[in-house]
Image 1 (cartoon, rainbow, N blue to C red):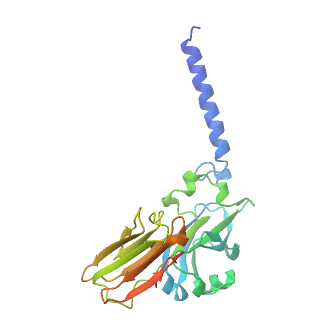
Image 2: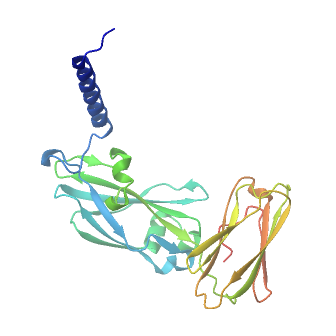
Image 3: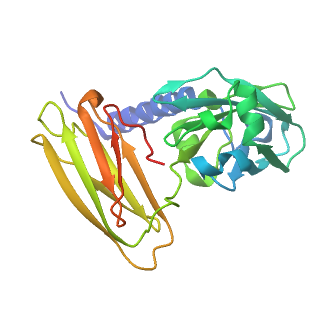
Length: 266
């Protein structure tokens, strides 16, 4: 069959039209085009997206909340806690109607809303916040209404689905500088199945694990002048097989941690 230039151009036009329709279906809301069709998009800048478990009782969620355009009537903030891969119920915290606004909610109030105490929020937990925006025209949008190319971009700082990570507290009851020893055991004898211990020295992290056998030993040198040391555990598969101890430079042996070790040792 002979293919002419005209037929090629026709096929290209049909492909472009199809792609345009497909994109429109995927992205029913837009942020930057016609004034009468802009989505009520809300942005947030969280001061501390990571909080230490030992500090959470005295800390607050502090953030600046702003609207991309003057078409947002209100923004509702809800919260849940994710611990050990299990999420709690989602509870409404507050609603803002003025933009920009400064948000400050103590984590003690957030814990109360969730029906727990801050002592029950531990390292490795996520505090997840979900936002719902209502436009001046009554349009209600959530995280599900926006495409990943909007909600996944850091510069958008979207206020519809974001987390605060609870991390392990720094070691405060041992000499930091010197040699720390990690003794790892796998009860089945086939390594740690993806689990690992992390030493975070002044913000620089190193992971330690082993992939075969029943035991492994690591010496970690923490240099003089170190101001912060955080030790944490990240789970893998077959957690009932994993046990480890930590020896400080003072000769203090901590643990054993496990089977099913917790995310933090302190």
